[in-house]
Image 1: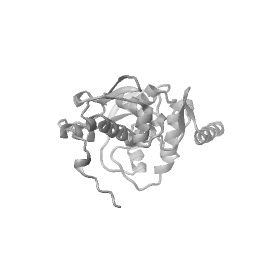
Image 2: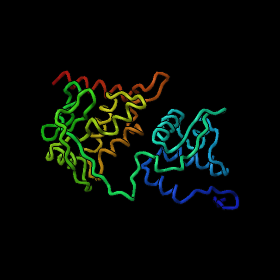
Image 3: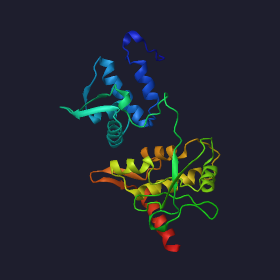
Image 4: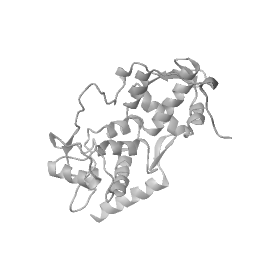
Length: 258
């Protein structure tokens, strides 16, 4: 028998203003899943908040508990949800004051073009790129000496053309001020892991015809969602997977031959 959902069997009311704010919040797929699950558990029962365990959110979304934990923490840090200790888990709900949310593209304001800064290498002198294009990841351990900021166009570009544009404008692809490093620091992901993610990101898109307006944001998404399965959460924080250790060995080997 085909599925046939009916409003009279139950529905969830949500204000259009709040829904539109969520659409502008640039949520990752996992964050979206958690938000929808919270909406279902709160507004779906005419409540503003609910005492929810990570296991419940895992069951509702199909996400593994470590991924649920990370997504919840990210949403709380961005003030999109509120969270406090409860009996069964945490009392959580959507923060209706969306003006407090961070990382939101406000429609009422002109879009700000991100700027990037200059640097040539990552910590330890490892260069990611080739003789024609050098596009490295900066870290706080290797700050850029040139603090001049320049604007890049926001047209659809392939990865290679974006890197060439960065080189032409004398700017760094992923500067130390990029949000990806703040994110990694806040949740405890090693900066080395970010370098490994960049290596895989570059491999995937170097010869691709796909185009994006905002490649740094695309890289942030790759890190936030751990696209390449480089690390996993453990009791001691984030550790490398087998794939991550392979990349680590590869990078160390390249350093030794330079």
